[in-house]
Length: 304
Image 1 (spheres, rainbow, N blue to C red):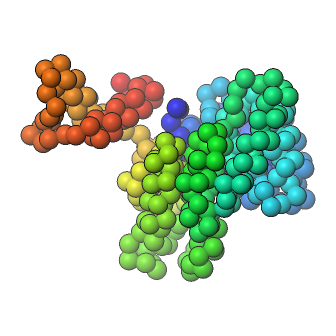
Image 2 (cartoon, one colour):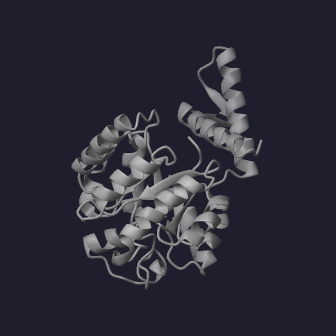
Image 3 (cartoon, rainbow, N blue to C red):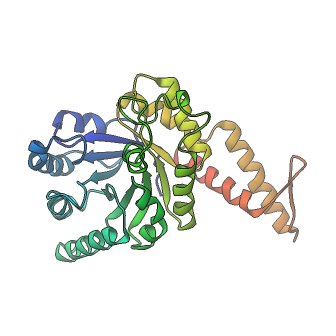
């Protein structure tokens, strides 16, 4: 699977941003039909997203479309029209505010019928946004509802609202947290989501950082998400892409250590040994798997 370090959210109704996004350094471009689009622009945004998907070159990107929530009058048409007219271009549909596996069942059946009707051999994936306490509680059932589910995404603002947490910033997206809580306020929620994702073999993506002018805060947020096991982070502004990519890219030291672990494991197997030692420390197979993941990502990014 391609890296999903940086996931750039782009308003669906703003055509001028789509071309720039396709040429950016973001791993994933998410054309948005939900929160960034005013209600009166929903139909226009849907048409514009389909046009951009068909007309622009997205070969270098993983491309997703966030539809409106399934409890709105816009979602079914978003899902149907985007999949019918541009399903051959997109990698996944992003479903916001997923609370129950039934949401995934619905999308899965709809997408299956559309793919059969269009004779489309490509399977459209699903990214499920975990934005409520109910969604987090049901995360494993949500992932297991369909093999289309490739990613869980943490939605910090709506999750905060769902549990009645205090609002400490204008955007509600992660900044100024240290002024309220002596530590990482969302450590449990993100780590819990990551656990559900990784236990079921899918990716975990962190929420965006709202103050795009605060580069230090963004870096701290991205480093914490990476440390908790997230595979990437949403970006709400192109200026955030480079920092997010840097944080989620293996460093030269990471790559060198991975190479040592993989080499030591290969040598131990060739000699029929079960135990592996690297730099005077015993290494188990879990570490070997982590090292292999780092090595494969470095190869994909042409760092080696």
